[in-house]
Every structure is written in C-alpha cells, then in structure tokens.
Length: 311
Image (cartoon, rainbow, N blue to C red; front, side, top):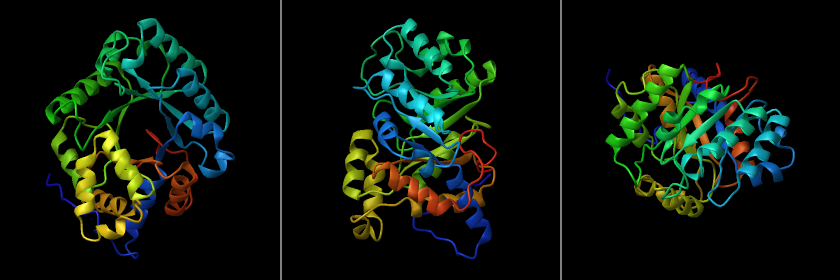
C-alpha cells in the first residue's frame, strides 16, 4: 500500500464533509495529559471535559506515587478515565511495583501507561518496560489495557531500529497474554514526521491502535522550551522553518497538524492512527477549550479502545 505524505499547512475545504467528520472523530477521541496538581487544583473539571475522557496522569520524577494515586481517585470520582503513568525505573523493588499496581487496581483504575521513566538509572530491578512485562506482575491484576509510549521524532537514548524492535516485543507480549495494547506517542509538531514514522513500522504493530501526541494551544516560546526538555527539538526546528513561521512565533495551535492528519487518514483508511493526545503546555483549560471548539457534539466516552476512535 502506498502511503501519501501530507503537509502541516495543507487544508481542506470547509465543505468537505468527509474531512470535517474525520476531524471531529479525531478530536472526539482526544485524550489529555494533566499533572496531579492540575487535576486536584482545577475547579469544575467535569465541566471542562466530557464524561469518560481519558486523562493521563504522570508520575513525575520528583513526585510521589501518592500524588498520582490521589489524582486518579479524583478523576474516577468525577466520571473521567484516569490513565496513570507507571515508570519502570522509579520502582525500587518488585514489591513496591506490585503495591503501586494493587493500589491503582483497588482505586478503580482499569488501564495504565507503562513507560521507562525519565531517570537515567533504575532505582530498582526494572531497567525498562520490557523488564516489567517479563516480571509477570501485570498479569496479577485486572487492568483493561496497557498503553506504551513511542517516539516519532526519535529518542536521545535509542535509535529507530531499537525502538521499533521494542514495540514488536510489546505487541507479541500483548498477543500471548491477551492484553489489550495501544500506543501513544511523544508530542511532535510535524505531520510528515508522524507519517514517516507510521510508514517505518510496516507490520510491526498490526492491529494495535496509535494515538498521536501533540501540543495544545500555547505560546511558541513555552513550546520550544518543552521540546528541548523532551528530545523533540528536530521537529520544532522543522516547524520554525516552514513558511509563515514568523506568525507561529506569537502562538501555536494544533489545528494545522490535525488537518494534515485528517487528510492522511482519508487517503490511507487502513492507518493505525485512531486519535490524538494533547499535552496542555498552555494550560489545562486552554487545551480543554480547544477540544470543545473542534469536536462538535460529544456524547460518547473517549480514549483507547472506545468505539468513537477513528476507524
């Protein structure tokens, strides 16, 4: 199958009903990331996000697991779907990781995002996510599904071949254990980077759904700072070299990138791309407002494995 490349600046006619419907489907399946502090300090959170919205909750390097747990319990209480980050390298022992998983399970959390974590060294026996999968601990609990991270822009600690092999191993784990698996990517600014990455996977993921990370509306100065921290500087430089980048220096919105991904989905109906994941660098309220403005009427729950995901 020949995959078509698209540009971030490529738009479609407002009268293109198929494109408009696909845009709504992408945005309606959007998940969002929020720190425990944002979740617990934001008033009227259910008014900002439709019921069932998937909210990813990071376990920050200087944070405590108790912060993540409290935020997840709050999300459950207000009718949102928590997806906590579980960083392999932060677990000091097999017993501590088992305790984390047990507390999440008991709190009503039924899916999680398994990541290696930002630490250069492991605090305990788990050097990466593969070590957690091999431990057999996840099989002791009733999680509905497990997400894993991917990096279309590359990763400072591993080349593309190594990252692709890791995804293949995780897919095989999901198959042999009947685990529902999905992939959510680090944010990037360039749809061509995303498409190139999807093409490079070949049949590695087969039917595993992919959710593309992107930054929510924010100031470009803020965005570049986050990009430098997260290893996506190449994508940021590509963004700034595009025609009209002077305008971008005032503000960034994900509109252009979403339009490009919409066109890609229409041209490649077999794509694994199922939705988008927003990083609210400009603030949780601003990102939630963008979702509301671009999704139209949202009646269903959203997120990994939900029927509203892009097909």
